[in-house]
Length: 518
Image (tube, rainbow, N blue to C red):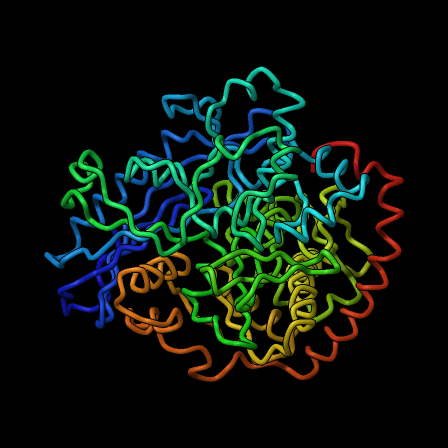
């Protein structure tokens, strides 16, 4: 457990519960005082078959209860106003009639439905599904996962009484209510954004009825903590549980990137770029997603599967001596020190960083990565830096796409990658816009807590929540400094990579880009 950063104890706290891909984090935030108490539990991501990425729901549930209990115990006697939820998007669990899991959690990273996504694209149905739901057709979505179960596991598909997501599973655990909320529903590929209800054409493809899916509540809906969960956690029964939202939209709220023209960019293992608009946006070009934060705040942007994981992979391949010296795991710090020795642009070495099934803005899970422009003079320093630059360039394409909606005035960056000066300087130079690093903010957990204040009536405007929890407005302080020479080099590189990708995509198919798991 991470203790409070300040000694002044709050009288009231809101707990933001962020249930992620590999860990759950419970953070108690002091109201009107900068105070934090954090507890975290990890769980494993399993790969029972190539391309599959699943988790044990029971292990996640146990981690949720344990993290909450530890967090509550560290709240220094403060009154817990509510527990407000955030969770990873796009997961799918099948339940029987008694609400017991018949399947593991099939996570967003699971690629088994690549064939279904390809079929929808090739048939021409993908564009209309994207327009209605806001979720691009991709193996990550529950829609394509359900199509896979219908085709490959028909008997199991028929036995499932309820199909739910990760957020829905946690809400049931804490409140005994089988419900979902608008934000998580908007990531399924089965929501009709216009009506805020399940889409009949998508459900027909999935082979399910509306009665097999949870009721969709507002993200500000308040439920009651059940007696059994309350006893395990150490809170009074009936403590408010705010339905909350998905981790991506809440990440924007947590970083303060909710004003017009402000973009939130998060980067960890994967990455995302998002901005907030007031109405659902159906991208006519099919490049950007649109997910709900509230009924009147929608997050438009794109996510990349290949973020910091790319640099870690490059270290595994090119840093064997570092692996040996570190006992089996080269640290990001060591790798980035190598990258910093190479010049901006990596002396013409370019990486297309598609190691995992890529998402925005191409939404092409079959596209594979490549190093291009290799010369005898290139060293591993260049290869590592090219990996960093490749990820930054991919993120910059999403920022460019967002400018179709509104000019981007500033970018707020968050995530573990930005502890590194190199990541900060490369991303700032590639974007060539004012970039502000939010530091080690609590991201989606903070967003959940801020949304909780809105749900409880403690604030009347969405943007006011973070300030009540001690977060400074976006743009306070100087932006990340940018070397003009680096910015010029990356401007030239951006233009070159765009042309290069147009040439590479058809060539890549000749080498089996669609012949197996990424």
